[in-house]
Image 1 (spheres, rainbow, N blue to C red):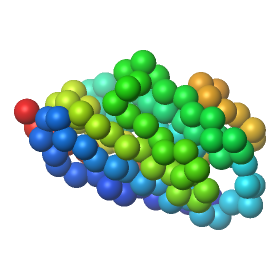
Image 2 (cartoon, one colour):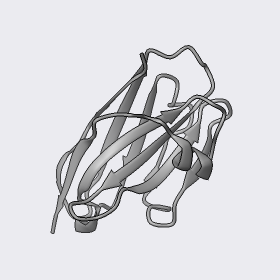
Image 3 (tube, one colour):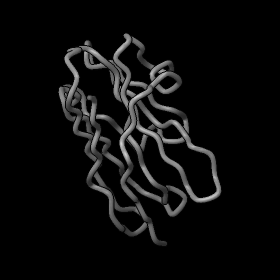
Image 4 (tube, rainbow, N blue to C red):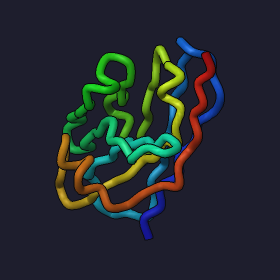
Length: 125
């Protein structure tokens, strides 16, 4: 049974940084994609970024490009999301997700079908 567990959320002031982690277990596929999403109260879930473990290919949506990064070579069993220059509008519940069918890039965000329970990020002004 695939299990994804996020950690690293918390409260930070505007301009600060946080590093989220997503530990994956229960899978036997060595190359897969992991993706990060967030959902703010009253808003739809938003895809942020993905990484494919086979070749460390990363993908970022425009909303986080330049501020959020997924460290390369970090996705073996644990993926990270480094978030810099955080803004109050980044406040949300952050989720990681995974797909083991060979998708990567934007398609990982579309197709990811295993989900963690999320970790809360709160950014104050």
